[in-house]
Image (tube, rainbow, N blue to C red; front, side):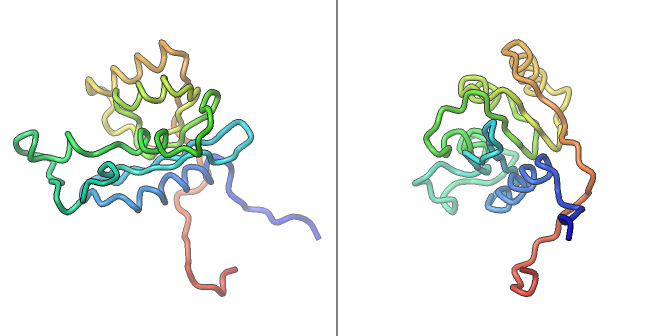
Length: 165
């Protein structure tokens, strides 16, 4: 008997982990996840966009519009920053990060400072905005590569029914 065919690639696997992590986000409008992987294809960090630990997500706003302090923006930690902060306690130099959404300029700073050397993203929906332009400029200047994920599949279905095991 030969090995099974049709299994997912590393990029599909790690982007899948990022997308699954995004399902933990309580943000009603945008759910983003991130997964950090070392050079041996071991997951060393994961995160999603949400409030900092100790901040009750029922006590803070989730609105996208209004006065700054009445919106989510001053309070929410982005997925990439959470993945960096939630890593397993190792040096992230040489790692790559998979993220559902191209990182903003603030996350780009954290990515660069942490030593991550590659960003693999699914969506670049804010391409051309000032935050995206600043992010790309910093990543390029710091030598951090970035690329859109390349997949041969459009979706993965998960089931919690034990008959699939």
